[in-house]
Structure formats: structure tokens, C-alpha cells
Image (cartoon, rainbow, N blue to C red; front, top):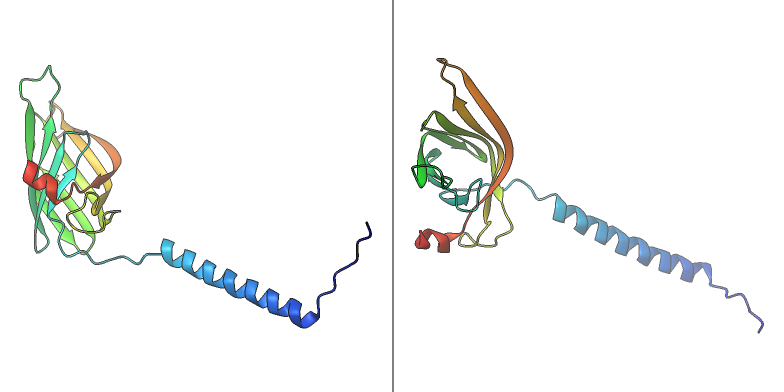
Length: 168
């Protein structure tokens, strides 16, 4: 079998190369817009969020940038209380920046500092519509006055969606 070289005219070669370049540019631009989602202004972060463990809940009420609410933390079987509810004593939201601190119970409290962003949910009623992303500190006050020990954890707290608000 004898192979013959195929010849493509320069005009035809340039046309194909042009198409490949245009398609590549379009795909590159589309990929860039998927990953570079601009910071979206979020009007209200009121709702319930998953906390550290499966049954723990963070509930927030956002009233024009002032945050209130609580964190319900389920205790182990060896504890006397089933749930400890830590009320939020100080909380603020400025644009996408979120910070709050709870009251102290049994010499322990929580501090969060981070941002709010859109999650994978498409509507406000969907789970993971919003995410709180940042550092959570679990602070334990020791017997010595003013002495504290803080454990810092980077967390993503995902909203539970509106259906879970009705269930609880």
C-alpha cells in the first residue's frame, strides 16, 4: 500500500487554525467566568446553619447588620444537660463580613469571624444556599481570672434551608 502525502492549501489551513483559536478563546473565557464569580451582595443571612456536629445548630437573625440568635450544642451521654444553648451576645454583619460571640456557659463560649457567601443551593429555601466561612474559636475560661484557652478551627457552616426551619 502506497501512502500519498495530503496537501492542504495555506488558505484552508489558516481557516481551520482560525476556528480552533476562536473555539479555544471562547472556552477559556467561559471557564474564567465560572471560577471568577464576583462577590455577591447578600441582603439577609437570617436562618439556621449546621454547626460543628450533625445535630448542632446555629440560628441567626440578621436585623440590618445586627446579629442575634443562639448555638444549640448537643452534649454527650455523660453530661447532665442534653442541649446547651449559647445565646449570641454580640454579633455584626457589614456587607459580607460576619462576626459574633456567644455568652459563656460552664466556662465556655464561641467566637466566629469570617464571611458569608453563596453556596451550592439555587434558592433561599434550599440547603447550602448560604455558607459562613471563617474561623471559629471555642474558648474555655480557666480557673485563674482572665485566663483563657482558645481552640481555633476553620469552618464552613452551611445553611439548612427553609424546610428545616419548620421542622425544628
